[in-house]
Image 1 (cartoon, rainbow, N blue to C red):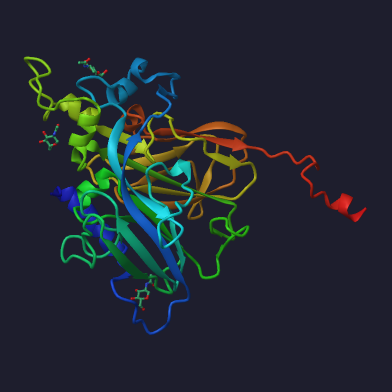
Image 2: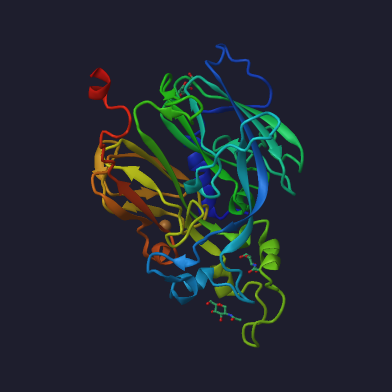
Length: 383
Ligand SMILES: *[C@@H]1O[C@H](CO)[C@@H](O)[C@H](O)[C@H]1NC(C)=O
Ligand SMILES: *[C@@H]1O[C@H](CO)[C@@H](O)[C@H](O)[C@H]1NC(C)=O
Ligand SMILES: *[C@@H]1O[C@H](CO)[C@@H](O)[C@H](O)[C@H]1NC(C)=O
Ligand SMILES: [Cu+2]
């Protein structure tokens, strides 16, 4: 299932991240957890559009007229195009799974952000509402050997995962994924971020708003990944829905579509959070604010090293000021940005082939001008 290189990355990452404990039963640690973090999460099948504007917004042309984008996003009788059947993690606010939690559109098909502080305990109430077995695991443990509890939850079954976050696991960034059939599950869409903060760092700025660390104004999460839709569980469904017959002959020389190199390449999506060619929803950051930017690569392929590159801003990465950061397959980086350049800027992968294949997005730096008309002018109140 895995190539040598993939296994190497899996195993090295596992060794590095092996410090969160997974249990199926309630914890029996020496210390009671500081706080229980309940999450109600499902896996649900969806139709995902990688380029919902229908345009290559980098060159400002319809997808079909763009030299590069037409290769990946044009739809016809021998190309699936931009819409694929996928499965994603969805978060609900209640144990009855009645109220869907608001999903940040910028996250695309990436699952909800799971947050906890050091010493807390996650209680992940997972309900598999998809048509095949799936699960939800932090990226740790030993993928190659023994299966952890709840590794394959059958359709319509539920499972409660209990993860203890050690006291010393502060400021960690992880991912979570399904491990029923790991490679295919991830290519099918099941992945999301986990962030562990220092104890006492998380707060709700206003009652009911999502939690956020005290030391930043905004957090941004971006996954740079190549999703090979041919390795997804749903290639057949995607082809059927697009009216593409895999077995019918394309031409005498080429035969049918199965194993056809240009068809296979057209199904590899070089995306950021599920969007290609600057089709991401507007991602606003604000002039002078403290923005924490989490960049993650979750691809498992040989050509999955990415270089995240920002135009129009620099960021601090472990004390170094940078505008580019390397991401090996399955690697996660946290950077801090203070935007000071108004306008629309590019955020993209610097690997030329990936950039051409659509791994590029826009973000907008906005300046808020306070006019005194906001209703909270302190001088007025005093008078
Ligand atoms: C479908 O679109 C691709 C990419 O634009 C093109 O190479 C191919 O010839 C088209 N096939 C048909 C049957 O129109
Ligand atoms: C955290 O504590 C555990 C248990 O004491 C220890 O095994 C582990 O190495 C520590 N990890 C770090 C990052 O200090
Ligand atoms: C999907 O990939 C496999 C492995 O590379 C290949 O054998 C198969 O033909 C591909 N399927 C299609 C429909 O292209
Ligand atoms: Cu890349």
